[in-house]
Length: 116
Image (cartoon, rainbow, N blue to C red; front, side, top):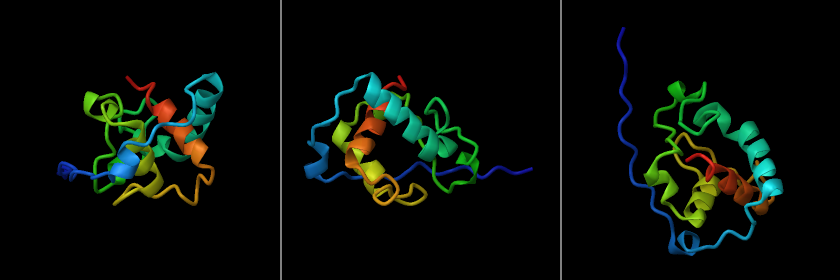
């Protein structure tokens, strides 16, 4: 049995416009519940229930799905996480047309912050 190791993901540059963008959605119980529901629907299959990148589809990807509990993920700005979720790249799909209300994407960012 051979295992194919996934190469380290390339740096994912974020435009300054997004990097410095403040999250307009307060991280409260309603936002976190909305973010969790959307995460469960759109993200959990690759990123896993606890954000460790170990969802059932993760093994099928060409790139690592990332561990949201790690400091390098949590140290990114909310704007950077919003941009990456909105735009996607490689195996990560864009969510522009799947999650139409941008405030819902911000709610997902709030929920991803709970994976510490």
